[in-house]
Length: 389
Image (cartoon, rainbow, N blue to C red):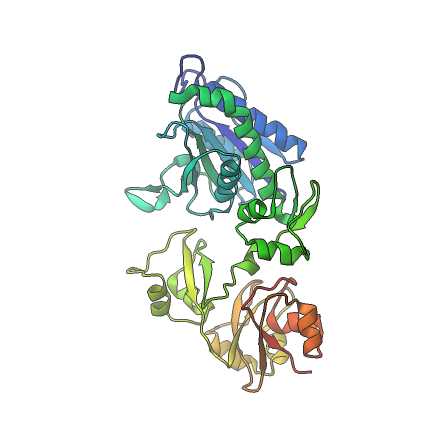
C-alpha cells in the first residue's frame, strides 16, 4: 500500500488558539502545514490538508474526515500541527501508543541538528484508562500512525515569525525521509555527516560505514547511502533483543514465540502484572543454548520443509514450539533443535556473509537459508549456524 499523509492544522475560524500581538496560532498552523504539503508534493508523497482555510472544524468533524477519507492502515500518517507546548520555544512531539517512536525520533533529531530545542517526544495516556491515548485525534483514528507536533508557544511570537518556514522545511524533510525508508536509502544533503545521519536512523557510524563499505568519513551531496534495516540492528550483541507489542499480543503468546516462560519475560522487564500496551517495548532475554536456534518463517515455508532442512521431524518441531496446527505465518519465530556437532560462528567486526561462507567452504545462500536471513545485513555478536558442507 502506498504511503499517504494527512496534515491537520489545529484551531481555525472562531477558534484562533494562542494569540500574539501580531499573529494567531490558527493562521500559522495553517501556513506551516501548507509549506509541509508543498514540500511533500515536490517529493511525490500523496497528502491532504484537513483545514484548507480559516474555517471552524470540531474535533469530531476532523476525526470523521480522517476515518472516512483515508485507508485504516499504518501506511496512513496523520500529522497534527499546533503551538500548545507549555514551554515557549521548546518543541514537543506526542506519538500514539500503537506506534514506535521512530518517526518522532526522526523529526526531533532533525530539528535538534538544526539548533532547535525539543523538550521531549512521548506517549500520553488517558488517566482513566491508561491503555488508551489521551488525545482523541490519536485515540480515535484507527490503525493510522498519528503524531502531534507543538512548535513551542506564541508567548514568544518572534520565534514563530522568524522560524516557521524552517520548522516546516525540517519537519517535511524528516517525514519524507521516514516514508522513503522503503528502499532503505538516504540521499546525502548539505550539512550532513555520518554522525548526524546515523543519529537520524538510530544506528551507529560504524554500522553505517560497514553497510556502505566506506573507508573514510567523507560524504558528497547527492550520495546515496544504504541504511541498515532496523530489524537486523535490533538483534543486540548482548544477551537481549527487543519486541514491540502488537494488537492481540499477550505475555503468553510473546513468551511462546521466543521459547521462554512468562516469568522470564516478566523478570527481564520488571513487570508486576500481565497487562501490556500496544507499542510497548519488551526486552526478550535470549536463551543461550548450544542445541537450539531461532528461525524466522519465510514465504513458501512449511513445517515439513523446515523440519527436513534441519534434519528433524515435524512432530518434534511442533512439540518444541507448542504448535497445535501446521499453519505458519511469515515472520513467525520458531525454535529449532540442532545437532550437538553443529558449527556456530559469532560475527566479528568486518565480517560479511561472503567472507564467512568462504571461510567455511559454503555459500551465502546456504548460510542465509540455514539461519532464516532475508537480507545480507549482519551485526557484531550475531550467532550464525554454519550448514554442513
